[in-house]
Image (cartoon, rainbow, N blue to C red; front, top):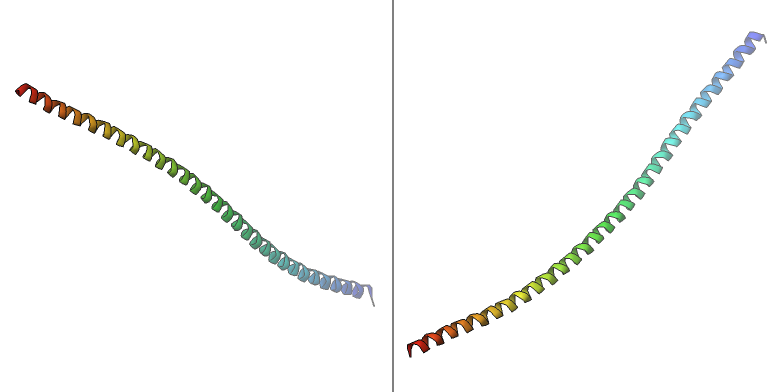
Length: 111
């Protein structure tokens, strides 16, 4: 075998090795992409779960705050209603007294 044949054989082997490496690189690229897609899906699910839990917490806090405000408003309304009833009663009693006094005064002046 001549040196030219040896070089040609070496180049053919090198070309074969390069093709084999290229196929392996393509296979590794596919596996990396598949693994990346799987990890992205897992992370997406985790993020969705975290967001769901956080939103549930925010909603629960808002509901609690709204209930507390509602109770305060109800308490204030009951207090105001009580005061209004008391004032109405006092005003009614004063009004009756004024009418009675007025009627009695007119009756006394006629006699």
